Structures are given as structure tokens and as C-alpha cells.
Length: 395
Image 1 (spheres, rainbow, N blue to C red):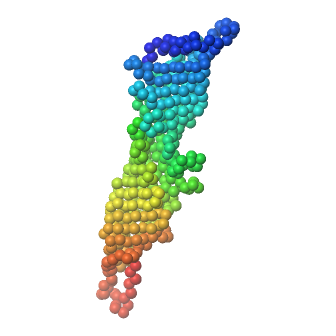
Image 2: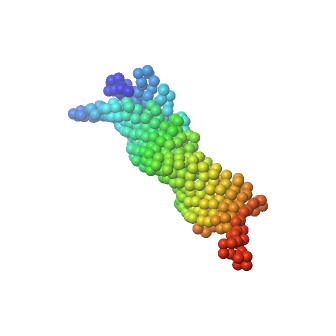
Image 3: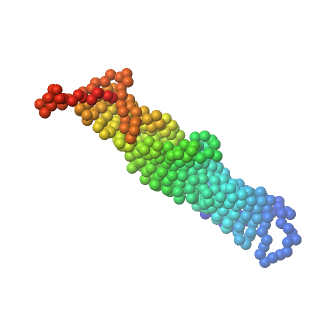
């Protein structure tokens, strides 16, 4: 929004303080071709919209005004951004330059942009270019935004004052900690390309490639999530990675391929309501959807669970795998079919353990099971005395 006579406005703001600043400038300074700068003990600048509402203000305990260059140099400036006439951000830095009587403002050194409403986000960096007319603030050096739980960083961050839309360019990384101790490495991170983030609604949208990891204290990768793009809402604590999605569990050599998958980062839950398939060395697991609890190290398959491995197939309404303890549970109309002797076992519940090469061995402790075994029929070259005995049935 254009300022009405910006130069006259700023000059009047500065000159209005002159009667109160006697002695600020040296009266014995020789007259030079270029007028010496005015030095002020304090500086107060303000811009208002045509309706009289304040748009921003800036104050400093010490400033120099170079009249010929229309340049103000200020130390330890503190300012406010207003939205609909109410303060929305507090801004401060070590130094500031007000260029062309307020056309541009450059803040340098420990720049802080503190959100005063909503999530109370703190945006920090080393240099901020501010264009008041356009309502655009661009953090150019080491931009990062943080709250009590996380920190997001990028090569450059640009804030639209009127919409509170934050555009992050370069490699964007979201780091999260499970404790308030920021001296330790983050427990998890999510990395993407350019991102759009609305600080009011929490809406987040980012280009890929997307890479997310959760690590232990030694830095070992526990789980890894990959996808082409993402969207979500940081206020709701959810981020959805778009299909195709790959979830890896390196320690178990497990790879899960899914469609759109949502990470509920506050609860450390990863969930998808669409069909997926997972490989665990020689075992393949499929289902209508899954829910992975990273804290409990469990994956629940919800609907049409099928576990297929050499020589046998298990089907159930739902399954659970704990990749830490290696325990497997199948429940609801369980049917285990083995190629050997065409053996079919039915139960309401079967338990299993992941063994060597990712193979799962099932048992039915305390549960009623029904088994069917088809034996070779006589008359096909097998005499009663020479018929081999069937292998013992095991679950």
C-alpha cells in the first residue's frame, strides 16, 4: 500500500523530535558539502493504512538519519506488525536500515520475528528484507521457525503480512524432539522441497521428494518414510505423504509400500486406510489398511490380512506385528493353508514368531483349532505297506 508522501511523512517523524534532542548533534561540526547525519537518542516510526489502522511501527534507542541518502541507520530496533489493527508479530534485531524513507527496511544480526497470536511461532535468522508497501518480509540467512515441539528450517523464508502465509524455499526440514532438551539431536525429521505454510490455519503443502526418519539416541535409523509430496495441518498434528509411499524398517529388513499415508507426529502414529503390501525378507503381508505405532513398535493390519510365505498362506480379519519382539498375532476367521498335504487349519486366533530369513512360525496356545489334511490316495502306485507316514501336524 503506497504511502502518502512517504518522504514528507518520515522526515516529519524525524524532525518532530529535533526540539527535544538539543545537543544530540555537535553544533561545532564544520559545514561540509554533504550534510552530516542527524543523530537521535530515540526513534519512533509508524505507518498507517488509509482507514487509519496501524500497519507497522519501529522504534530504536539510537538512530542516524542521512538526509541526502534518505537512509536511517538504527541500533537495537524493535517493531510491531499489525493485522486488522491488532499486533500480530513483534520484530527485533541488532541493526536496521530504513531505506528511501520506509520503502525498504533491512534488519541484520539476531533477527527475531515473534508471533503474538495463534501458535506463538518464533521465526529467526541473520538477515531480513522487509518491503512494507507489499507487506512482504524475507528472511535470507539461516531462517528457522520453532515452537515448543519442533523446528522448521529452509534456505529462505518469506512471510506475507496480510495472509500469514510462509513460503519456504530450498531444502525444507522439520525437526521434532520428544523432550524440551534441544541440545540433543531431534528424534525425528521430515525433509521436503518448497513448502507453503499458513500460520493461522496450520495448513502445510510441500513438494518432494519427501524423506522422513526416526532415529534412536545413537543416530541409528529406526523407520524411514518416503514419498513424492505432502500436505497436512501442523495445528492438528498430521502430515499426509502422497502415493506412492515407502516405509522402511532397516533393522528388520522390512519394506512397506502403500498409498497416501498420514503421520500423526504428536502421537508417533503412521496410518493408511488404503491397500498396501509389505515384504519381510521371504514373507509378504498385504491388507486393506495399516496403523503403525512407532512408540510401541507395532503394525496393525485392519481388514483382509494375508501373510504369504514359501509353502503356506495365512488369512485373517486382522493381524499385528511387533517388529521389536518379533511377535505376530492373527485374529478373526483365521485360515492357515499349507502346501504340504494340502493342510488347512482354521482358528479364531493364531500366534507366531518371526524367525530366520523372516519366516513366521504359527502356534495356537489355548485356542481351539480345526485342521484338515489330505493324504495321498491308494491306487497311484502306493501300496499299504509302502505308504509313507505323513509329517506331524504343527502350527
